Image (cartoon, rainbow, N blue to C red; front, side):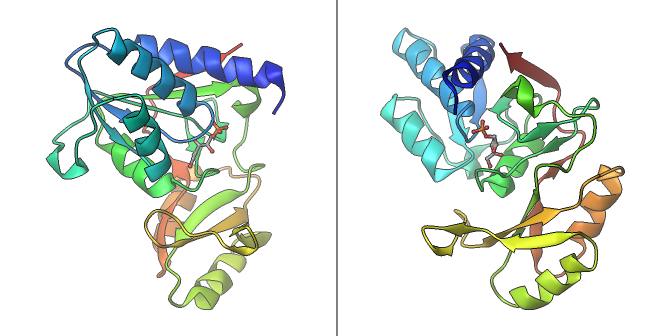
Length: 217
Ligand code: 5RP
């Protein structure tokens, strides 16, 4: 990642963190942009900001704990005041592709439980039409060949995500299929169709969840 992009991510993360207020229950996103928001929130906690938080991944939870941000179990949450997360693509209607970092399932559960979802990104994430970034689809390992066959009927290509020469495993013990659906002209319909395929746990389309986008420069 270039220094310029990293600075843009930091600017977006810092700005979102400045919107957190004492007393809030906050969702902490995952990825290299959410990292900066979590870091800044950690600095503000050290300066006296009083919040509680839940994390969208084990990675972000570890980060938050390192910076002494109080983490509570998700089962204790009724509603979150604010969720701050990154995105892989953002369209003009604030529909998103997420899951490049593999955390899409917890990210979506937490976004859906939040009054506001602020997306932080650099400008490369803004697109007219979703789908150039392959859509991550979280699937259960059982019957995966069958799930892949179903997906292949609907898109150009399906790739089983790998990490260190092994299948990538999510925090929930599932696999990720990266699918080329470009151009995604009807994200809402595709979202519904994908989640109707047996074996699909969730897909990386975030529809009507994001309330604000902060693009760093
Ligand atoms: C993780 C995600 C991330 O938010 C997304 O991949 C963007 O990451 P980054 O801020 O590193 O570009 O969805 O599952």
